[in-house]
Length: 103
Image (cartoon, rainbow, N blue to C red; front, side, top):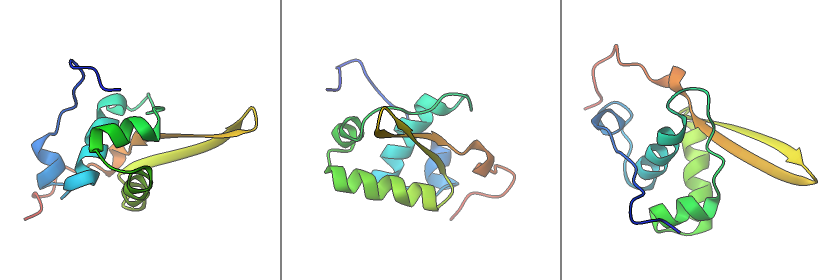
C-alpha cells in the first residue's frame, strides 16, 4: 500500500538525458529515489512498484528488464533460505551529463 505522504520525484534529466517515458520513467524514478547515494539497493516488492505504476506484475518485470538491458539499472540476484532474492539500484556510472540532452 502507498501511504498518502509517500512520493517519488521525476527529474528533468530522466526525460531529457535518459529519454525515459511511461512505466520506465516511473520505475526508474522510484528506484533512483532509494539508491541515488550509490550504496543502497531497492529491495521492495514487485507489487509495490506495480502499485506505483498502476500495472500488472508482468509489466513491472518487463519494465525492470528493459531498464537493466539499457544499462540504467543494476540487478543482483541471490538465494536466501531457498528463495531467490532480487534487488536493484540505479547505475550511476551510466549517467553522463557531459553530453547534450537527447532531442
